[in-house]
Image (tube, rainbow, N blue to C red; front, side, top):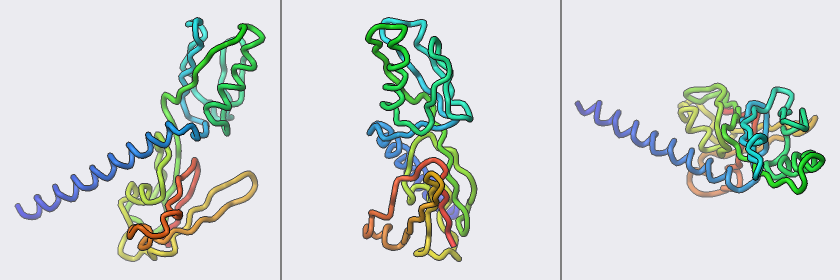
Length: 190
């Protein structure tokens, strides 16, 4: 009985932390810095033109197919950049097009490897930070080198490496290390 109460408390704590992670991540999507990528689903509304209002997937090559303009590149652009590009293409067919682009479903893969309880790929629906990702991976195992964690990010033809000291961040110090993760980031816990 005592063991089941302990399990329930741990479960509720993890659930609360996971819920916090998702709500914080959803808040980040509102800031306008979300970068569109393959697998995302976009809801495009064109004012006073219901025939052009569509829900479209971002294809593996990073493009979307949209009426009148055909294929247009979406991947790698923010929502406002894509909205501007699409508006420029639509102006040939509609005078002063007014449109709004929303992420209906995000597909942000990140990877956590090494000495965590549940390593693997995590497909997220919004951006999260390093500490949140480690929580999704079940936390560090007892053999983890807590203060030599690295985050690898592919930028163009280069790989950027960021360091993360778990103990410092969890104590509220060096919080600048708790970066927001981007599509394809890899967290390595030695």
